[in-house]
Length: 433
Image 1: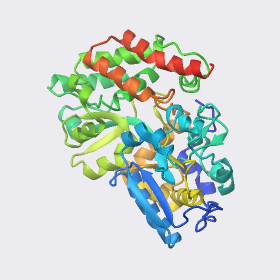
Image 2 (image 1 turned 120 degrees about the vertical axis):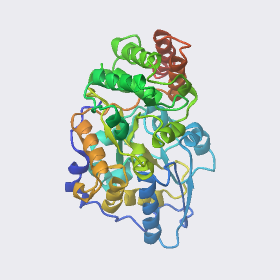
Image 3 (image 1 turned 30 degrees about the vertical axis):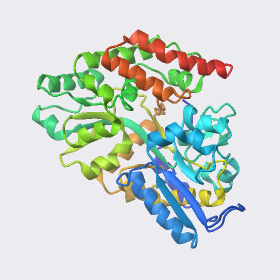
């Protein structure tokens, strides 16, 4: 991880929030394209914190840009992830879209010349001063598409992290306390298993199985390991103690019945619904579920950080990127700036997201306050460790396959680690590293 200045994301931005204006709004910043239309894509569900905030941002954009039509299309995460390169290389590209961050995603597209270098615009609008350095690392890439570079190819205006959601009602039935160590966490899961319940809701066909594996590896890791794995500082030994522990412990959780064997075919949406319906008492996944759970869950629930870890999977949120082929880059930048406004940032926080420029006093819901406070705890300790699928193009699918093999017990941990090492090392070789 980059050794950046450490700060509570919400609180640190307050001093500079007042300076953030909309000086460029209403204009097209010199673009000569179709100035009457802004085509926008994102993949946040309408009920999520970000979906609510982006809807309000679109409303405010329309009000501040009379005569400009916003053509918004909601896309699926997988739809954009799998087809972004092809779409952005065609005349079907939007003017602005939400896209996943990291070497394998935004980094790859920046290297391919499909994303606009926004550095000059970021500097002109002051975003380089308002976005905390720990968040900006995933917005900036070098010539090889490695994050933490010197050029801005996207802007993130919220944070996210992996945590543990739990059903408080079910914990109370078994007189269970929130665990503070990994050993205590395993004791809790065993209590549920002994009571006839599979404790974890897991999606193996997409995420978050790989995130669980990574959290377990991070329990044994140092910041230097994260630098090596994510930023290629040094070669990674896939049979080393960190990844070996993660794969072995994950397989052990399957054998003990903490993770159901049929979860290899379960998608993230179905996993989330099972937790909403109370079918599983624990779910390990990202903060992006918080707003939806707050809206849809009828029982008493809460969250806690992955027990015992100093390092946690997490980062700045997904990026607003402007395709190179965008016909209205100025309008796209205007929209991004609206998402930075205090009222939009406060709305993110009050709708279950993790804003970077909100006023903490404006966040009223207890669960949302806890969500933001936990993120600030991780960030202030320099504990954001990104996500396991970021290092190499196509690595998300590699890890999905690897975790499915562990869930199905079709390969042992050593074989799975060898399997996921090959494309990682092939990518290093292609970069001459």
